[in-house]
Length: 315
Image 1: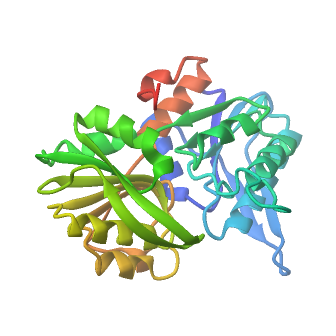
Image 2 (image 1 turned 30 degrees about the vertical axis):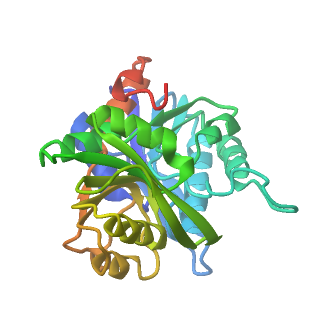
């Protein structure tokens, strides 16, 4: 383990500290600040020559600043002759544009994958990508973790009866099916029509939720509009308790206010994206994925398989 060094960018320092605490290692020292004109300044203070280095940085808002900071950290470590550099990205931003579904639009997920490799990343470790095919955008090894077991361990303590797992859209069926299998629960789907990237209209519910406790599962919550509308539809179909298990809590704009005024009884998110004090709510519970990432990092360090850390989604 003395050949391993873990650094953290400024986006998610608390998660990096939890990872280091679990692994019982000291965090590497890096100086990160900004010049007067806003340019990011980085200096690696520890000797990393020949070391196995891990850089923890979520590309959450402010997305551009955090992404550029990660790229500069990777470049600094590469030039410092690190043996291997793993970019640990709990939340992988720029993932929503993963295909060319309209004329003259970019595929930003592929662009970011190329930039990370060019900056010096030897491999990537991430959690619950927005789309599974993004794994194929990388020409370097990528390890994809799932938050399924973390959510399962939390909800099983509540011992909910008559449980149904709900996918908030058709695209999330495969993941919702994996959750339903893990929880030994029923499965339902919200059929919705998207008016814009941030606005949707719920059409109807496919599946039986009447008199059931439901858990809506998804990879991320941004403005909260889709989740709130889905909760309204579930209540109209006489669902009892409505929970939501969302991996990445971006919670932009007035998302927290929408959650507080919605039919959702509890929103459970992970600390892949830090939750600011302004966004805290009695309806929002944060659970940590620090132990999950710590075990994955340990297994990467010792060249062991990490497939034991998650159930195969859809496999």
